[in-house]
Image 1 (cartoon, rainbow over the protein chains, first blue to last red):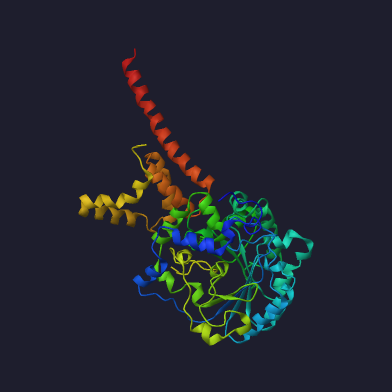
Image 2: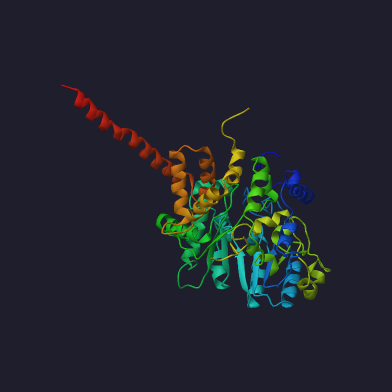
Length: 350
Length: 110
């Protein structure tokens, strides 16, 4: 499959930039069909319990090219949500009772309408969460405004930091990312993010830098807090441990490193039926940069649109969406392994 | 090529119960309990197991607890430090017998 360069798979015209190819590989893994696994405990079909989180991918453009990125994001990706589609999102949100709007990308801040969109969402009184890669804050002076802007709109910031040292972080996210992330975290701390009593939430995301599963969040959070405080005087609120799903660039890594079959077996061995009831797709709707609707960000990247009439925001129908069954495939084992995994970390709490 | 150790055999560990189910069950129940959170956490026990794996030089255990240590969020430096603990104890265990040698030497000398 070749070694990943600093370009996205898409820019390399890599076979794995095609969703059909990814789905074929998922099917070829020698593991039990996920649907059948759900059937064992009478959990199939997987149904919706509501739409509490509106997750919007505002574009695939990013200043980083992380090795595990399920979006295949990068500076060479030009897919960006337009203001018209953002307006469709705002109209759709008004038709739901969702409490949270979760903005992701790419680097969502690189969307030219990001500020406008956040202001509109903030005015609606929703909890707004931005998945900020940290380095964007210091990538260019024009983004230095972000910490104050986030503070003004009481945005919850969620940022990836796979480890508390540069070796592991840079191996996954690119050379120099750790130092820039520390610089950005200091800027966020300086305006109050992650500081006790400020009310400004800064959560970090850990995901394994390799072909292995994440641990329980609790103990690792304690270690992250101690190390970041002692070494860098950095504070944050919570650590989310997220499992890497075998799609896009992480799938490419698994194949290139000859870890694919072993990793899939590991996910199946760690399958936890208790996690199934709390997977994020049951109360989340995921919107693509072009306005199409998906069960989750991973299904979005595999172009598995919702199983309901009206797959685009222009024909948004809340009743149909609430009554749909969720599309599942072999990658779903990633969200049901161990304590489960979601964009908010593990789903089964001890 | 035939070798004494085959990584695939690690997955068959549980099969040892087939020839002695009662003792096998007792062992695996005990094993599972040992690695649960106790006064030491599961995470701490993983690093101890990694060190012991090296001390007993078990390739299955080394594979298993390297992976488990990574899953528990330990990095290379921490894991190598644990191996050095095993090495120091093994080395020390050899060297401390030098005292026995010295004693015997003195006993036999004029």
